Length: 182
Image 1 (cartoon, rainbow, N blue to C red):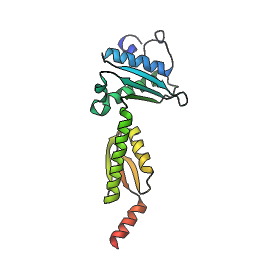
Image 2: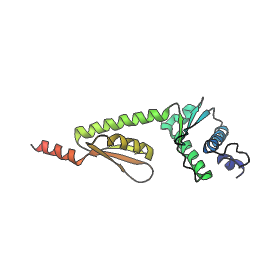
Image 3: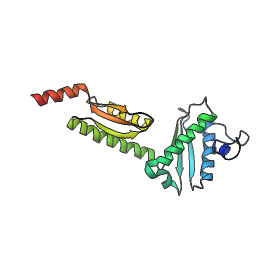
């Protein structure tokens, strides 16, 4: 590929200096930052054991990445994953693109919400729903709720973003109905 699309998808083989997934990601991210005229720098961290790659972005334009619940950060992460999948179809790369520890703070607030909603379900006995979430965020909620055998969770909806329904288990539901009839 040549020209603009070639730059966005990693350029030609002759211009690449590092053919590893981390090298491809760094080249493409550098091109995106340059074309968009963003004042950002980044560090690429490779976990040698798992092969996972974490890229931390920092600089004056951090706010642009984090606006609207990190949608631009999520979009860039998805795009970079697709680039690696396109260029290295045999490689399985676990990529996390982060800025100012946004991912960690986001996960913590999601767990607080799940805990609050679990409390409502236990108190009122009626199911509640978490807003539509991507698969990775739904997994966090499901894993958190799996630790409590009084409640269950299920993804509801079609497509990539689905809601999470939190409801009482059958055992817990029967106990509540017996207590209310006594």
